[in-house]
Image 1 (cartoon, rainbow, N blue to C red):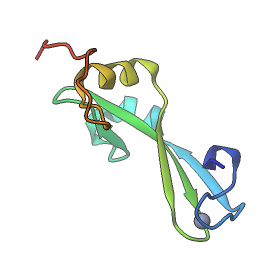
Image 2 (image 1 turned 135 degrees about the vertical axis):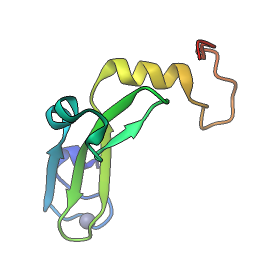
Image 3 (image 1 turned 30 degrees about the vertical axis):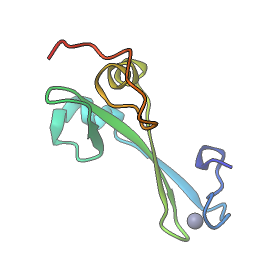
Image 4 (image 1 turned 60 degrees about the vertical axis):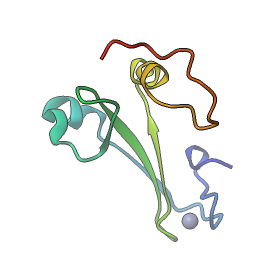
Length: 89
Ligand SMILES: [Zn+2]
């Protein structure tokens, strides 16, 4: 079960709320604390789901181009070499 479906995966509560700072982040640039740094120049705003019962937070990046950048720049979590990595920095 995912919080996107409105149910907390930790405590099974239906008291899940969603907040996005997508528009605020675009307006305010890196001022928006509700975002994740992709690299030194790129920040991705987050959509956050919060369980009002246990406090669990789940966050998603909404912009496909930011996800593509992460594919290019970040390490793979499984330790495999990142073949999509570009050496453009
Ligand atoms: Zn919960």
